[in-house]
Length: 279
Image 1 (cartoon, helix red, strand yellow):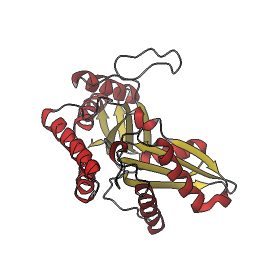
Image 2: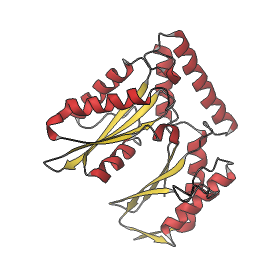
Image 3: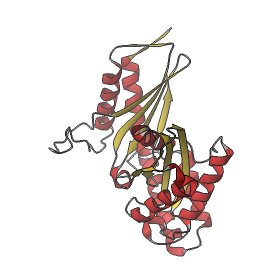
């Protein structure tokens, strides 16, 4: 049994909050660069260039890539041989509190969805924990802005809708979103599970790097098909037209009931942020 202190978790989460908000992941950066090189529409190409300049300046000056520094979504892979010394979730919340304060990041969380009073420290975080073999604790902070989050959708399709029904729903989601989520977007798609599980699958799918293939050839092909159909919509970067509406589609699945076909689409903007640390 290995012991990890709550203080170490707090310090790691604080670092990750700042890192995620100021440095775009390499795979997303590379996807933007490829899109800029291959985009034929001049206005779209210039827009992509401006987006890349913005994220480069954010990295150099250690400033937020986007003014919406998001809800702190914290994903934890906790080894079953790990003992946490102290209060685990409180340590994560304290890390978010410290990171958003020390990094001068915008605090966007309200304590109640209807009374709308800002908590003033961006807590509480949204925490997802998976228990895994081993003696490590892997922390990933993925700040999620709500310009794109608000464009996300969930549907309880019928099994007879099949793969074509899933594709229609995903593409329809992008059409309805239009320029609102600051394209080029990244899509996390969940298929299967239950009503609550499928949304979690879609959110978790966004953690997979865009240059990492789906391990299942069937779903790898489906991701490619969806990406092609979405980019054919012509929405383009920031809605100015062109062939770069989406940088990538990642799919996660789970077993489901014989009578159901749940599908969720978590829309993310070109600032798809995540940072990971292993304790």
